[in-house]
Length: 440
Ligand SMILES: Nc1ncnc2c1ncn2[C@@H]1O[C@H](COP(=O)(O)OP(=O)(O)OP(=O)(O)O)[C@@H](O)[C@H]1O
Ligand SMILES: [Mg+2]
Image 1 (tube, helix red, strand yellow):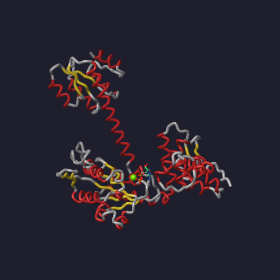
Image 2 (cartoon, rainbow, N blue to C red; image 1 turned 120 degrees about the horizontal axis):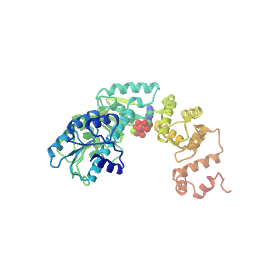
Image 3 (cartoon, rainbow, N blue to C red; image 1 turned 90 degrees about the vertical axis):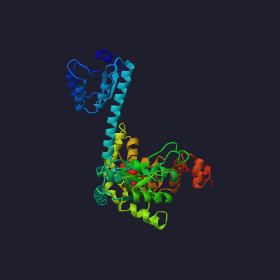
Image 4 (cartoon, helix red, strand yellow; image 1 turned 45 degrees about the vertical axis):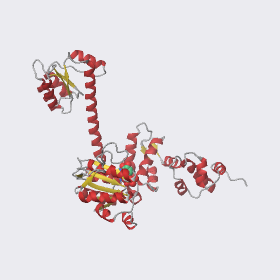
């Protein structure tokens, strides 16, 4: 029977080992990582239940398929209770075996993948994942460590791309809630009514399109942390609802009368000046006080230029990992210096993107300053004013040609649209983008 199964499974593409006793099976399972074991319950010198228990003690996640006699449903159930993946009732068809084996292998692979993803998420979400030697960053890390241990509401402020989400994740993953969920929601991404049901859930039929009930992110984040990203953009009526949830620790799904207690830590983030928004009456003062128990500010990159080389090093490593075929191995010192000297209105994210772009498009093992200049002059995101600031005084005609080329690329090559935006005639665009002057 074992040999027949082994042949069939081999034909189906699996690598199969046969053990002719329970002891041999156990010995093999200590030496190899098998994806699945198929075992009978009744064997000559052993009990299948014992083998199952022992296999599970070697590798708790090893899927074991048990073969049982026809009608022995009780033994099958006992086997499942002991952790068997499934049972096969003799006589069985080959396709039953292959489909169960495929499922077992799949499930195990998913579980392993899931675990390594989780580990990766934890690693990427620790304080250690945030680069920063600048004093302002060191102070920030200290604060993160301190607030992570507490349950206090934290408001993370900072310009776009400075690392606010990274800080919010670190607050979660460095604290006692790290085993719980971390849920992030961007308050700008959805219209008000959708955001409401996204946050608090809804019952079936609560509104058109609510074809099934939803728990909502507050319920999902129970025992963990919710990041309310871009909280400054939350519409006023929702701010009122959020305030109530925070005050009462209870959520009520849209269209429901039942409340549900939730234990959720709230971290909010914004690139706006919330105090000013309170003044302008676009943000509720009471909610502001609730969220701003501990304010953290992530400094813009220009205030920590000394960190640029470290950031570049980190981003170079990850970009190379992501693009294993890239020719670029390192950046020359003058490239790093140029990256440090450039202004990054998009902060760390913009720098990260540029590093990846240099890795992807570079042609030499050591990328130099020239690559940066090429990257800046090409492509839809090139900032033409960088070129201008870089050079001494360039002829206006050249500057104009570069600017027009940039405008055209911004319009995805649509010259008519670019001409419209520039406020000139399309025929002028054709001429001037070639650096020609107008006819007299
Ligand atoms: N100090 C840092 N060390 C390493 N990576 C960083 C650092 N700061 C930011 N990053 C990276 O830069 C990118 C932007 O960071 P993040 O999304 O946390 O910024 P943000 O402030 O939330 O941006 P936005 O305002 O656009 O939402 C991410 O890819 C992040 O990994
Ligand atoms: Mg963000």
